[in-house]
Image (cartoon, rainbow, N blue to C red; front, side, top):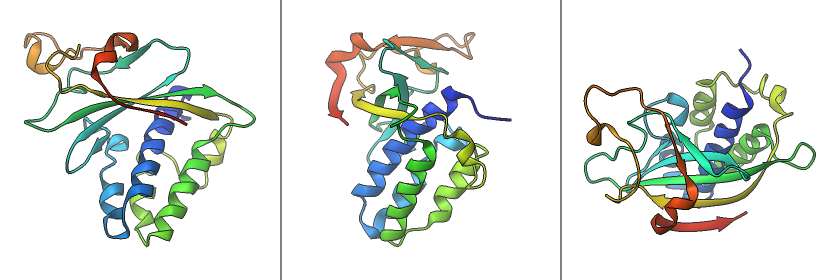
Amino acid sequence: DRLTREIIKGLFGELLVLKSLVNSSSSSKINDALNSWKGPYDQGHDFVLDDKIIEVKTKDISKVEIGISSEYQLEKELDEKLELLVVSVETEPVNGISIKDLIHEIKNSIIDKLGDCSILLKAIRQKGLTYKNIPEYDNFKFKPINQIVYDCADDDFPKLVKSNTPDALNNIKYNIRISSLNKFIISEKEF
């Protein structure tokens, strides 16, 4: 039941976002930041925050498209802000970062802020990861290159969602070409 490179890469991107949320949280809000991570629970969106929802996609830097795995993934809920956060990575077997490295960094930040590490451990366990088996994935190492955040709640954002497709269609999977999303960029960050 070993996880694939693609699943590990997706977790890597989500963990980068979680690390950023944890690092920018105050001690009193650290557990809220940890509980916002819904990705491992396969509940629709990757992060559900008080002020917005974030869907994270992690892609190889050379790829020009991202995959959307259902008609619900980019569906906004009521008047919530919905952002698509795309992390581009390079495979870097020697000097890259493993998910074990990221989890240890996040855990240390949680401890420094007196947060509840069990929230993180419970989330990664949802994907079958434990401190005992996580070193088995050290052969998957990535170097984050950049991250771009898009406003996918914009009515003109190109997406197939349940609200704009016929009821007879379901289980929709499709790709979005990143270069066609430039006018929806909210922010960009280089690592």
